[in-house]
Image (cartoon, rainbow, N blue to C red; front, side):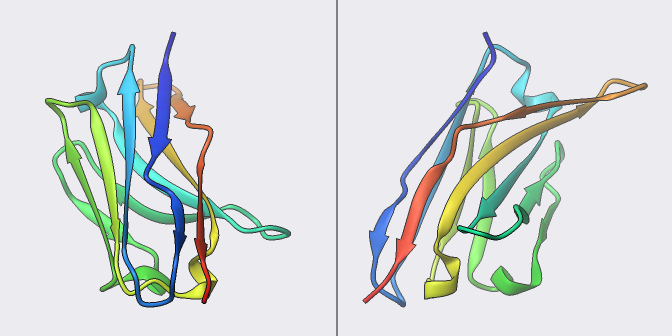
Length: 119
């Protein structure tokens, strides 16, 4: 059974840091592009960062220069290093795996981990 399990969330003061992890199982991790999304209460889910199969990365404007996405294919894990956190970063953070089969996208989601930034 395919699983994506996020961890590393928690509560932190503004200016602090957290490192999220997303461990994958039961699919060929290295074939998939991996992304982090977030969803705050009452808001739509938004893309935070993406890392492709070859390691190319892309970030949403609000997190550029503060967040870093990386992957370790040997550990089937994707990470999100979050620095200089702001209250507006408070959200549930979810990871997504995506693979183009040639005809459709195969997509898996994790359950999410809560990040709260507050003084």
